[in-house]
Image (cartoon, rainbow, N blue to C red; front, side):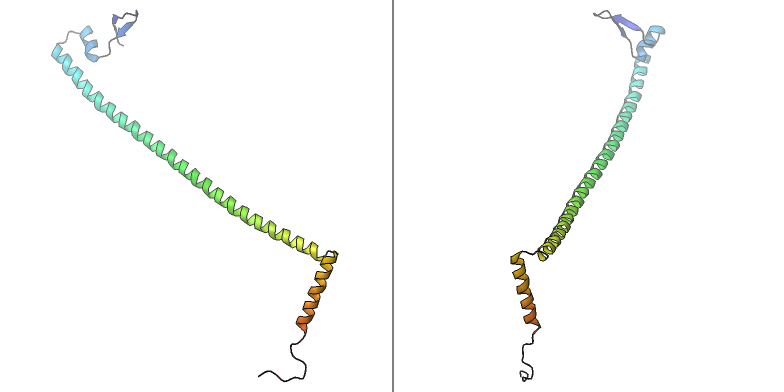
Amino acid sequence: MGQVAGIGPSGQGRASKTLAGQLSKHNEIGPQVLYELEMGNRGKMKTKDIRRKWMWMFLATVVLLQVYFVQELLAAFALFALGFAAIAAVFASLYMLHKGWAVAVERIADSKHPVMVAARQGIYNVEDLARRPFRRPGSAAAR
């Protein structure tokens, strides 16, 4: 809707953007009226632009806060997952150590190696001594 006001050095025309400039070309309006039209329009556009700017800033802030909140939730989830994985690894390693120890003791107990046969015989002798009474039968009780 703007008209070409003049031709610049590059050969392209320059469009007139002001309402007063467009009205003055088509109608004969006094300069005071044009000035008042221009100033009144600028005041409204300025407040409208400021409100629009604040609206976009508010919306951007809301979006950024939600992105930040989601990032915080993901970070917390990652930390809890790492903690749970560490605790699970500790319990799994303790379970495997226990099972390995049980298998090793069972294999050693069933072994026919001479050292194990001697150790087993020593254990049997200690058990036999533990079953014997400390006092002789028929002796008086300690007072």
